[in-house]
Amino acid sequence: MRSLASIVLAFESIVLALVTPVMISVANIRPAVAVPVCLGLFLLALISAGLLRFQAGYVLGSIVQVGAVGLGFVVPVMFVLGIAFAAFWVAAIVLGRRIEAAKKANEQLGSSAPTTSRES
Image (tube, rainbow, N blue to C red; front, top):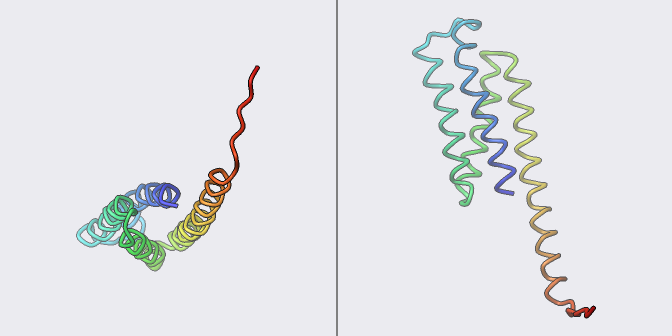
């Protein structure tokens, strides 16, 4: 689960960094506002990717998703990108849990199955 979620956050951090010049040039947002907001979300995404071994990483990652969707009020295309990354985030968590459960079940099957040796 952690690897899928970190991939989503890494790609999202790139998008969040690239939104900064879009906010300045297209949406006419002052750089004094756009830079801290976008680069703050960028850093929060990277920090949360590093903290994914703890529950706090997933909480921060969810906050990043809310912030990315919220940027859509300033740059409308971010509604689409924010919702897409939020969907990837949820999918990474759901699929990651399923993968971990399948690995655990496979390990339990493997440890309980008798081993046989083949001789040539």
